[in-house]
Figure (cartoon, rainbow, N blue to C red):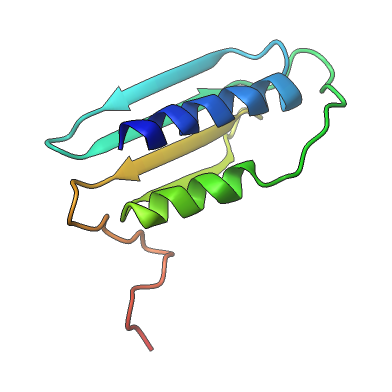
Length: 108
């Protein structure tokens, strides 16, 4: 759980450096009971994006890691032109509740 949180913050900060130089970043951790939530939000870039190499697998890998732990990873733009990444990991042995737009296992 802690490694997934660390990796999520690391990847988010790498993305800020590449895609939103000069932005302001807020990293939030919550422990609602034994679960863990990490949210990284950053503002719109204040400088041109850097032309750095990318395999474009960072968010895919984070999503797979979250799912392996029974959790979820959501990401997307914010209304002010920034970006938000949210990781939710339930306690070991349980699964995160699906969001309204996520398919439930076994649903037809």
